[in-house]
Image 1: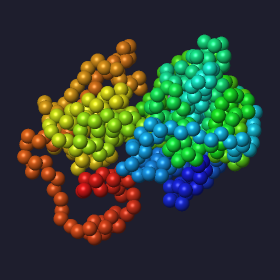
Image 2: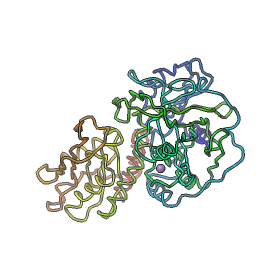
Image 3: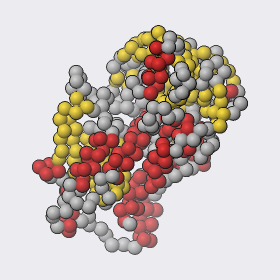
Length: 462
Ligand code: MN
């Protein structure tokens, strides 16, 4: 179970576009990825100027591909993720792995991309970082951006979460924190690493459950850390207990620049990679970034909302909301007021959420125009709007109060009110048989409806 194996599978399903022209790692690759972006194919850049290595992008850029990687479908995706969070399973440690084929001394041969105009420089954006606590009791895996300072040093952005805590514990013991930094891993590992599991749970164990016990780890050579045996590329490093530098500017999920902060330096001890490895470049604020970061939080919203309404059909942390700030939730309600409870549950489950909309199951939560239709025909601001002032939201929201970080949250209940005659809200249908539906599908051709849309279309008819 490697990225290579997944790419091979996707190749068969016509999901990979090969870019054969020579492209620069500075701006040109990211420009091409940005122009394809949402619902676009995996892009394989075969010739990157001055480098030997190929670059792959937008690997996890669609829900369809994420489902394929986890060998599931959209109906079962959330359940599969929650089950893995609840039943992590230790992967086997093996003596040797493909990632150990070649060793290099520094970063100079890696085609690390520079993405946007004001970025501080080249950034590694798909890095899965493993570390264990100095007492050896806690292991953690998480995704971090890494700014290239020189051939041997990176700056790492540590949001005050689990890896930050491990680094602080090491600092208090007067030690650097040893890490493995894996780039080019199977999507299941990326999803596990961005899952909101508690401190103390090893995300590699979650990945192993997602991969049906087929994840294999190897020990690093120069640091006390594990890495996936079939990763494309692994950097062995130490997060310095003492050295900090300015990190940024860099573009975050909203497509705006994050502020510059003092962040710790990673000293790179060694680089190992597969022969003919492929470098995974993930476009900040691109479809892949939004899905990997947002999808696990859709699961949290789905779980919470499922407790207050009879059924939650879909949760969409929409692309327009940067995959983070806006949720569209399609539900089946039993009573008026259920929609508002679903909104409150969503805000509690995902504290960064700013605006949320609930719709009925006959509305496609993945189609912005359909959602707008629900607001146009089923929503009355005087009855169906919730505003919550002065609450903590996302630090990524540029419009939040910059001093206090407080924001206003808005919930929109665009479900049909039961107090009014049902017929007023009925969506008109044209009565045809299945062969006519098939004919139209063929006329429109593949790709005319998104994968997600077909899913909703199916369930709304049941
Ligand atoms: Mn963790």
